[in-house]
Amino acid sequence: MNDKKQALGEKFAEELGFPKAIMNGFNHIELFGNREAIVNDCAGILEYSDGRIKLNMGKNTVLFCGSDLCMKEYGSSRAIISGNIMTVEFG
Image (cartoon, rainbow, N blue to C red; front, side, top):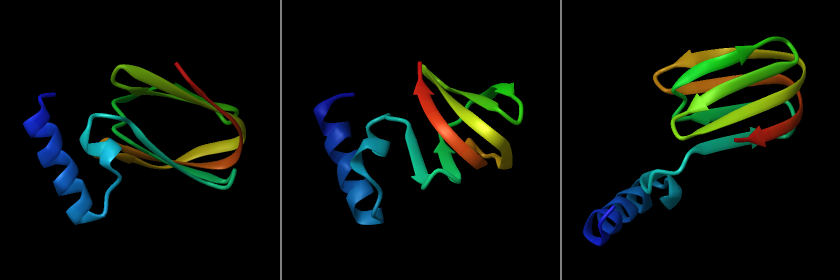
């Protein structure tokens, strides 16, 4: 990304209260303790069971391992995972 576009993206993010990393093409994951995760820029589900949920995030993947895992929401490039999250792995 050229410097002008990056600066504009950072200003836009600042005005909206978003982390600058979102506007610079980085994936964004929010964890709420070990009970819930919000994943933005989700491009697809690669694996789904009550113990493992693996998501495609474009160039990367993220794997949630635990128990009683489920997706409370999926759509519009966003997923909400709830349950007992034990580990989060990036690939």
